[in-house]
Length: 242
Image (cartoon, rainbow, N blue to C red):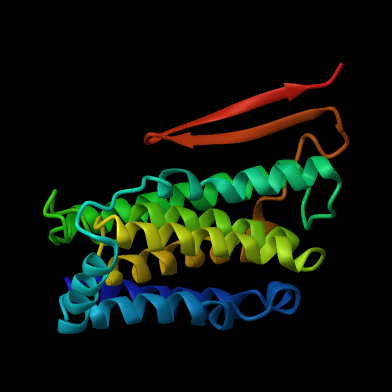
């Protein structure tokens, strides 16, 4: 398992470094992709090192003793999508964002899909039993990866105009990961790698968003599209003001 994830991390490092150096204009505008990748890659590397370690097992045991074996609060099913609600609420409230709502929706959808695909790939190829013994799809945490993907989109959109709003996404994502632990659904390594994946995929999308800047609604202020992702299905809400 560690070999698979470690190889993935090396590939992401190579991708970050190689692609980041090929486009000097994008580098000047967005900064070095490798630099942006330090945090998510560090999270993934930490998760790899902690996988199946004595510390991880001890941490889980301590957590269960603290909250009780019957603790199961499914708030994490909702907090992973909360940053999406905050982003569109901020748009409606008139908070200045980095991108038009269509570009926000596009980047959000691509980030979530890429995150979900990578997370499922690892789940299907890595055998790791959940701490509650329910199945062997523990690694990495899908709830956490999606939560940090949506939280990262919120951060990218409002980091320059509303820092409190921007960082609230990471707070919600961390809450999601914390409840995956306390609900005994995941190990701490699952959470760390999941968070790294979510942040990394979103960083890649925003770094290269200049490659797909098509926006048919740029001059239309009366149409809104909001993505919907629930129960492994993707949909779109359409709204038009007449």
